[in-house]
Image 1 (cartoon, helix red, strand yellow):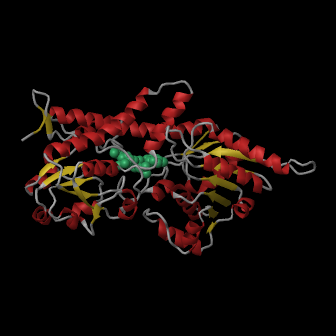
Image 2: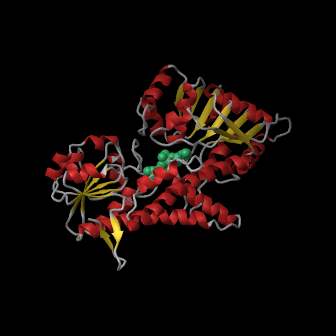
Image 3: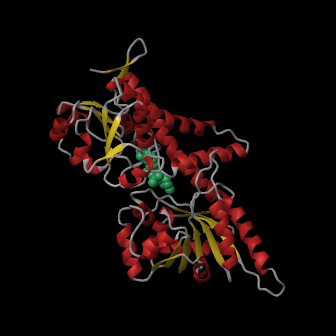
Length: 452
Ligand code: UDX
């Protein structure tokens, strides 16, 4: 099939290349000329395992094209995916300016039946608004007497791709959700995804949009739940890793997304939770459960900072080493990364920060001031008074702890991801603090203190 993807950001690129992989002819469009120029020169603007190789391969095979010309792409395509950004406004609402602009522009170039598919994360009822925008912009241009009517459908096909494993997630989805209002749209979308042989859930537009809201918010809720449990674990001397394991074997619960840490970040969960809360508010429902999910997530960073402040005693003038900056491993994405808030607060208290991340330092440089970015993990711990582990990169597991111990001024580690085996660190003479590992118990006066 001929497919156009409007918006060549993270979702657009991964979707485009994967659709080319399963046999379609794909044009990825973006109004950022520089980006298109780079993509055409084989330079991929984001880091995602496997993406660059696949882009090069399908460009060579001429199944994947990058273009700034939306008009040509729309005319050629049977199906048009809209994958433009939907950033958060100050009040938490999703800003749908790009969606509206693109819908209007597609409408102006349509010359025959098209299926428009919303792929970006959008609030429920956006599909109806796209439909109206297209209709209004069609009739303004093509409503003249004698002009043939242009038919179209709007569908919703939310993405569930995780950064770092997006290609794998696309190829082996747990399910594909398609929200449609006509049999023609359903048939076309089934055909798009036929090669994947995946389970397809067909529903109407509003329910598909709601599935995306509910699924992401539920996952965020799982994380906040285990983070809240971790807080209690610390106070009563329990180990959240064992608690999550014991809970996770129950099939009704499942072990996934029960990793306690410094809270969720990234381009999706924080934004999606905000948007769902706003949507519920506007519809007249006070979604207090979800508001607590957000609150626990913020508290998690604050309590990690508290722990560092408590154990380091005086922050001013101390050197703090940071391993990992990205919002999670296997990505260079710094959007809403917990590391940003944590580092900024410690800097404001007078700490010097020296950091290393295998992929995200380039992006981190735009966000963080006065951080010393280091060439490797060893350089980051040199003369440091403590080490914070903020992203769970596999390469940290191979590090020589004897060397690290020798380089640091004080052997104190705060593992914000419960990534390391505590015993490995303590055997090397480190003081180790994880999240909810029972390292911090409450004494009778209510003051938190380290357990011996
Ligand atoms: C998420 C959804 O998983 C995906 O389906 C959706 O389409 C886009 O948003 P992504 O943001 O790439 O994907 O990352 P994800 O792996 O879900 O992690 C999000 C955040 O939660 C990260 O900061 C991660 O570190 C954190 N997290 C995840 C935890 O703190 N604990 C967990 O158990 C899982």
